[in-house]
Image (cartoon, rainbow, N blue to C red; front, side, top):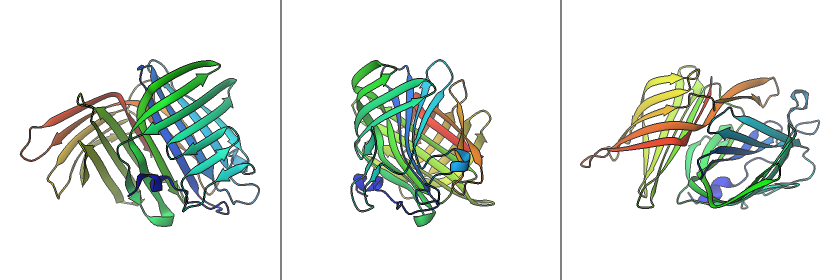
Length: 317
């Protein structure tokens, strides 16, 4: 699928129950940590101004979460009313803007004032590929328009700025749904080879119904895409933030053994709002996770990729 289309808006501003989010994970090139930015739209057409006002959730929210290399993560969130939002139509290139906050398919600007701090960013990003992980129509989807993103631009924290080209590496994603999943596990890892090429591995599982799961992984490796299924889970533990599993691409015979480890001080646990406004649930995220991925290609030597603080692991339930 054409990568810009993966970012196109799905929700209408009259939608009463739905979340849609465009997010970026950027590990800083200097190794000091990672940033997680979210442009979130919740229930824009719900009576009373959208969002979930009784829970303090605004219809438009901008999130900035800092994952320092040595220390606990911290989130800064600012909410905005639906008035003042400029949003592209579903058949147009992505454009979301509210005040100083803006995101398009290949650039974004953000300004969040929260907890006595001011975080501002002005970024441009590019990548070699983008994919659909899951797509079930109005129920929801998970897309990665930029799987091996390279970021350039400026980041300013309380008046102190850093510049870079590149300033960091990571991904840009786009998720949407009528509701959030009760059980959700998602991981992404990016590896840069000495040749200049990149490999990414992304995996997702969620509960469709009791005892029924969606499970898929995508391996982007030296310009080829492998769609892997047949999961065999060895470990999934949200308390210790670990996820180990095997999967295989039946068509090519490529197999992957993956181990994600998100344990440590950088684990961040945040309440997310349910789209029916009945309450919140906890999401655990570590955007400084480590990962080890073994790739077995028939007729070729085994490849082992290690990702130290180049991975992200997210769990619900």
